[in-house]
Image 1 (cartoon, rainbow, N blue to C red):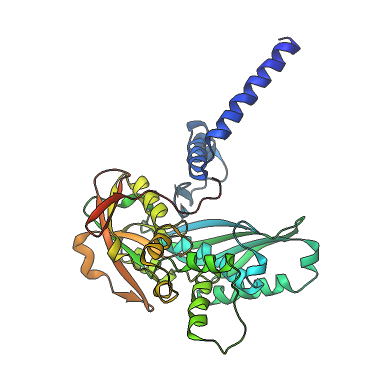
Image 2 (cartoon, one colour):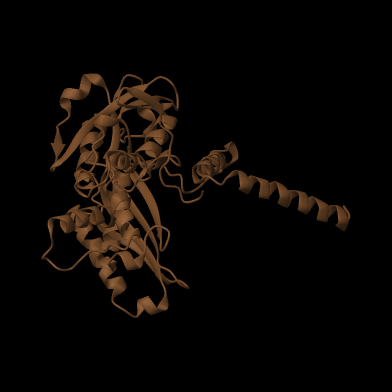
Length: 372
């Protein structure tokens, strides 16, 4: 082949790749393509013949859920998740202390483990920071926040890495959980006729983000007015999320949830993910959605509060489905965190309807995405 023909072939290949990248602007479409690539017959064959595939360990669930599942001996399955937090994309240092950031770095991964119906056991944490930050106590405070939450849920740090970055903080959080064999809860188990529930309340984290963007900050002073305390609650919903670890583990152990996902991108988006994986639709009653009370106390209008609850994200509550015959088995709350029935699973695949004031409209995913 001549150099001219080679050059043309390379140019055509580059154009095809460019076209592919342009078509993958949605991070969820990109993940789907990577999932398909990982599951190609050639890759599966290589994995089966790999030394990584041993007699006591096998992959049960890979890309496409809140976490991967690996079968172990002794009647237990391992559940593993990873989360990346990048400064100025997922957080801003001027908005939160290092201790709060350490808490949140672990919380987002604990939430993924909870969404699988598992209990968290181990963590691996890596952080990259600029030289100027390394010379302060920032990293020490970051780990203090991490260890405080880890201790509350009996999670042991077993490894990680520390490195230098050019300008911004980058965090990689990995958590490993355990669940009884076959009891992990996937996104793909929902069936028509089942009921949809959500833990806690929604919209508070998104409202806290709005306050931060408007210049509001946490105050160190203990003498605060009622309105200041309401704003602080909303700020902490965003800066210091509380993963629903006990709810998730209970739902898995009792085999109550048929499908589950944590609400990180927003109810509209995460319900869509669950419906897509299960091949079902949903019908949600707007009046039943548990909107964070502090939103109303802060003066948010009803429509704005509902919008934050539907599309805001980062509430890290659990969204799950239950068979009608199992409703009596569910407690009204665990650890002071209530659960609310918000709607039902329907047959029309990937179609979600929102009922409000006797009017019905299609609810489209409008939560957070990294690329848009």
